[in-house]
Image (cartoon, rainbow, N blue to C red; front, side, top):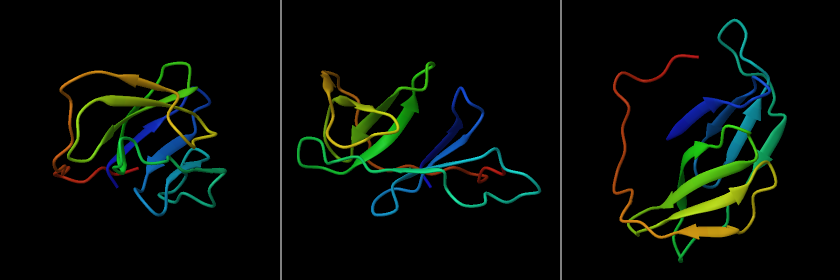
Length: 104
């Protein structure tokens, strides 16, 4: 899991990466997720799979960065699909780790 956060509806949004996609769950209770409410798939950007960098404050846009490439891409949430905008930047994802791992 590379990224997780709560959306404005207090739902838990988790990027499980390709091929599982970004899954949205009701707020976790007793340490469990339950079944996903939405599964959002993001198309490749600039020929590369992307990692979620964040969800906009209004919960309508996903910011994503392609692995081993530059720039950031905006995707509609929860629709996903192709990016609708490119932000030119030197940002890139080479590798990521969380230590210690997050606990819901």
